[in-house]
Image (cartoon, rainbow, N blue to C red; front, top):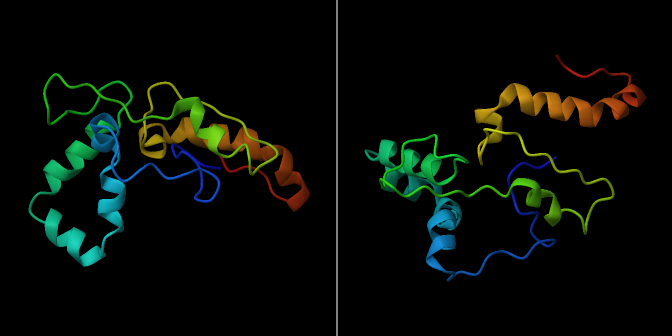
Length: 134
């Protein structure tokens, strides 16, 4: 199960290092967070509110989070396209868009996400002697 990622490395090409501004504005945090953990922590320390506020603002589906740039409603969601990156590598790929949730699906709609996972996994749980969690 994946949520809001374009697909695993080796199956889906990474975005180019230098991309159009609209793409870079949404994806710069990925290489930033790959840098040595101590450095990223030191760079964000004292500015946590601005950092996370921006992160959530650029990745909310309907502009629900306050944006640090007024009037700039942007969206990072892959939506139904999240499954496209897995089709070359998996037999049973299903896509589901949970209304009202953006990039942070588990945080924004935990009950709906759990229900969707249970519905998908339930047919396979019987073979393992288990049942879906409530």
